[in-house]
Image (cartoon, rainbow, N blue to C red; front, side, top):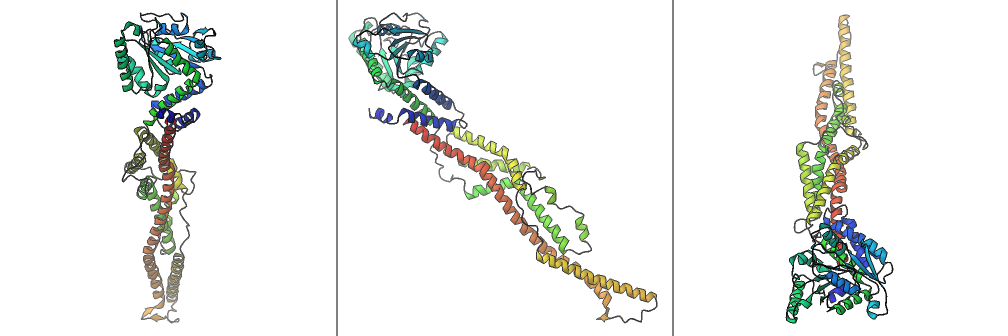
Length: 537
């Protein structure tokens, strides 16, 4: 009894709201039938709540169980034709006691055959005011449409009275297909052992005891069991009193919807895991994030950009510090960085597509991230993580290309020392040109037979013009050789800085397109399970 009271602590509106939240979370994530079933249940709840508080009770049973006879006895008229041959009842019949708005309710139930009980002054009839009693087709009919009609109405009625007979009360077909699955609906189920007038008293008690044992084993301990005989009226007052009690409570519809909500929540709970990652499977740590970023950076062409930056820096450095007589050769080669079309994230770069090795590394890194996010989750959520990772992988190519294209590669200023070396190179070239001009002047004086007129200065026996020419050229070449390793060092330093910037941008893409969606799935799982727990409490 305490269990039923604790279950009713949560109002039906709150329970349905929690179930609706769980369905909305799972709607685009879980490809499982339980979500569709819960959605159908919510639609049913909305329709049923709008149709008033009349109590819909259905009599269900097998051919020959006497349910139609029982239905007629309760109705006080020959409403449904009983029989023992298949098929008998083909469509549901309804008997209505009072119940304003019953026609709308029966229209929703799609029950065409209706009988309304005139309201005499008898206490029995007044006690049933608000009851809509249905006689369902036989659940074991040879006609498929009859069985489908039973299945449909069993899902919609407020209270289900299952009529069994002494010969087939333990039939596995009814217990396995109908009674056992209703374990969560024990409070809205009544089991009737009909036709007990065919048994002597000891046999009837034995049948009832065995039926009680079967129901208890199926989780239906809270379901009442009544013994009746439709032909003689035995047990009919007790059954009528049980129906009157449920009608008077005006809670049958609410209890059925609450039971349906708990059942739907229990089915969804099968897709709730612990959510615990377990040892060694923490949330994406620094090493895993770095590994994913490195794999994506390689696939995005970051090494090619870094190489182009370094070669471009070498080219510019050589243009400033190289030997002026050979600098023009470097200008014949295009800037390697300019060919990549970087600097505008709205435009595509000219980076080469990722190779097989790079794509395999990205796939492996995505799988590791997916497995980390999926630790402790049920299979349905791991399937959703797989779909999320696949979508992320499809979007990554364009996102990474835009991230690389829009990354600031840093200032392209020429270092001061290179400017100084360049100025010195030009000075040495001027010195060499002065020596060359001097020598040309001496050649002209010799041709004019005036070579002895102008004295020729010497340094350590070497004519000064020759020393200026040779010294300027050799010093310029030597300065270019000394500066080249320094230019390379600066180029590599700039390449490392660019790699850091590009990796940071790639990491932002990895977080936004991969890790955050994966962690979002885990958060949705937690919200889903919390909502399912509330709905099923």
